[in-house]
Image (cartoon, rainbow, N blue to C red; front, side, top):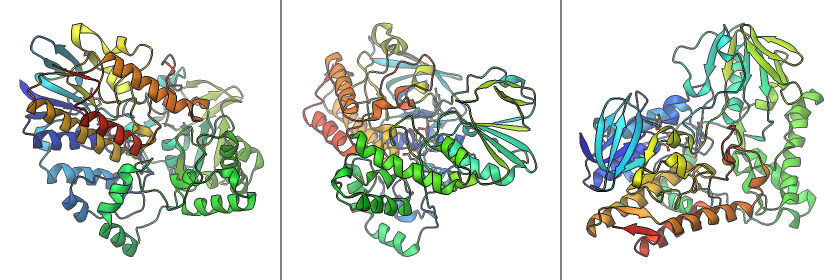
Length: 528
Ligand code: FAD
């Protein structure tokens, strides 16, 4: 079969790309591995799964009608509510008729003579002009490299593929491996249900309270009344969300008392805005230490057993250089008599056997094991697909030393291929919905430009790509991000090249740069 464009993925990115490309008059088909729309919110159904950007902004802004008619119920929406929203979007804009579900894209090969891609899926071959990868930054889960996982005789649950029928946890011994965002969200709910919960922690992460609550109707009405202006602010902000109205000053420019009181105020507000309090948290280690010390002191206050509190205090990375978690009662949970913490840095996991997890100090018998072990982030989904560009160049080879791209959108040697929130774009550092909309709008405009100028193929130039990669690296090097062995640099996947992948210069700055490149007739692209 043939189409003008193939989109891979039907999450936030794929759905909007389908809407937009269809609007250009392109015959477009989306391919989705899952059996429904939603991407992240289709797969991650574990208890406690929520967005950590306020729902008011973790949502599309492209349609005023959609925005006006939808009401969120909580400050941070739950996974079922976000999934219902995305299903509503798919129905409202009649998107489902062009999505092929339960089908996986295996390869995509470019033919230079015809300037067309051949996309091979588990069910079909599709010949198309444009291919858009909306495959997600966090869509390929990573299993722990622990021997014996397959031997475990109890129930094995993965946060990324949470089953619809969950075994009853009441009275059972549950183990949890992984204390990133998903682990920190799911743990308190597991503790409530299980007979006993053991949390196996490799890296202590910083977490701030979400203080989630039902949306206050008056405040929500105020937001809706001012939605368009607020969205515009988000688009030009650093994070892609509406920042609090506090002028950022250096942390050490104010007295200790003033600093603590500002941190206290942010802690009371809760959420990721905690770190937007001073302007130099991400660039000055001494400033960063003040925020990290504040959170460590909070942990010491909340957790009654000082030994457990110490284990929970992150010391190996500056705060914010790994995605900060937001939680509901995570630290407090460790005060329960039926919750135990094992620090696997001190007491490493040796293997998993039929009965549970075995660490250096001995066996931990379990009935249920929950894995929240993260993702092969940003490049995992793209590199799973055999993508071959001009002259048969394989993406896996082009990226053998780490991902390179122009703007995180295009790749030299791979004409008419676009990525949504690819490595080299703000992506995972930002409110991803804002970034997704920006990318899709930009790509759609680019395609419109190609058509109005009768250009068959557009390809990033190698020099532009190298320059962009250097710019992304320079931006990261001007911050503290490099001090963390995080998934931003691929450190959680053995053998993955250590390259800092997201663009940290800010969503607004990035948008301006993309707009400038478009205004200059797509500088850095070869248009043939
Ligand atoms: P995804 O939602 O990941 O969708 C990609 C889709 O592509 C998937 O459905 C996948 O099945 C499909 N796919 C991949 N490869 C193939 C293939 N070869 N063939 C066919 N289909 C394929 N971001 C925020 O900004 N704020 C948050 O609060 C937030 N919370 C999160 C919570 C969790 C638990 C997780 C995992 C991520 C969270 N994120 C958050 C990041 C989140 O991934 C993005 O916000 C957003 O949902 C990404 O949308 P997407 O469409 O780009 O990718």
